[in-house]
Amino acid sequence: MQRGDGRWQVHIRHTDEDGQSRRYTVYGSTPKEARAKASAVRERLRANLPARDRKVTLGVFAAEWIDSTLAASDRKASTKAMYATMARQHIIGSKIGAQQLDKLRPSHIEAWKVELEHRGLSESTIRSAYTILRAVLDTAVRDRALAQNPTLAVRRPRVPLRRRPT
Image 1: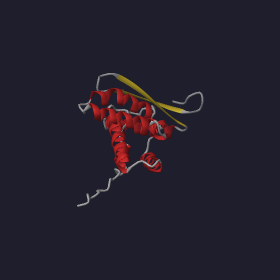
Image 2 (image 1 turned 90 degrees about the horizontal axis):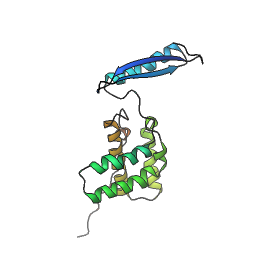
Image 3 (image 1 turned 45 degrees about the horizontal axis):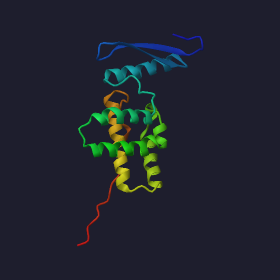
Image 4 (image 1 turned 90 degrees about the vertical axis):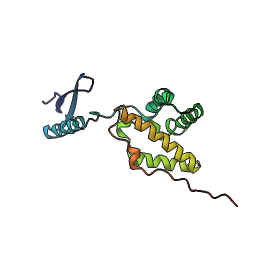
């Protein structure tokens, strides 16, 4: 259906796993473009993925993760405190924290790793920050805020083994 502003729109109706009826609307500058976008949304729904990734920033989602998922985990209190501190310093407090989840790509994560290196952080700190970011984004996938975790396409930082002098 063509809108008054000249764009074309397609409505998609879907019943989610809770039995709630949902309606998604996609827009395109041509009917073909609108149908293609609608087809992509239907494919995601068929694959049991969210119709769209959430438009919340990674920093906001990470803060929610600290207050909910991390707080509810069975990790030791000292580990929870360290994860929360590192998430606040290296995810929420960095450029990547301002990135919206629906626009987050593996290249953003690689640039973030380089940013951490330029800040002079140790290899083990960078690896820990990456592990925490991956946990945050795994939760986003689990909670259907993201279709897939972009950290899976980025190589995990390595920490070289150091031999003790004998």
